[in-house]
Length: 147
Image (cartoon, rainbow, N blue to C red; front, top):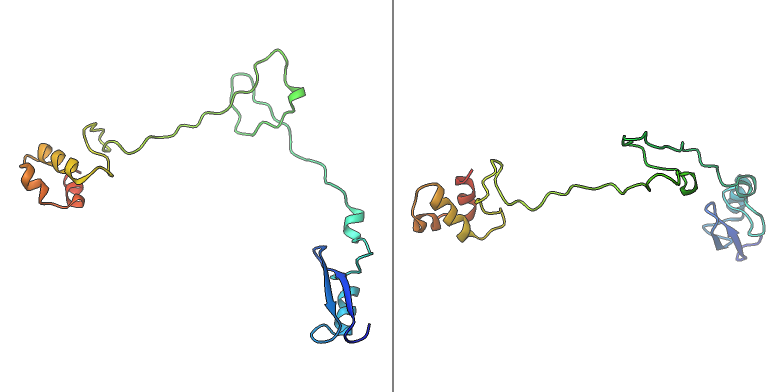
């Protein structure tokens, strides 16, 4: 390696890169990184890749008891399932609808996103005031009054 030489190396993540000998990559720095194993020559196979293979799966296969639901995910293979029994059913997720009523369950209460006119009519009806008086308040004030 002489200053100005361009050499191709393999980085610690396995990517190839081109480096020019000189500043900031001096011959000594390149040799130190090659010796430490941080960099390698492209023709060299990484030692870790040669020695290791895929790791075997270690999770434990689970099956819920008949009539019970298990919090563990089902990891059984399709071929291991009882052919006589029903197939696993998908879990159902309960999703609440939009805010359509108050916490006390008033079905006539407007939604939070309802227009101000609906809130004015609701407050006028429930707070015993005229619609004109309720319309003078802001929407935020009307919502506070309805609590």
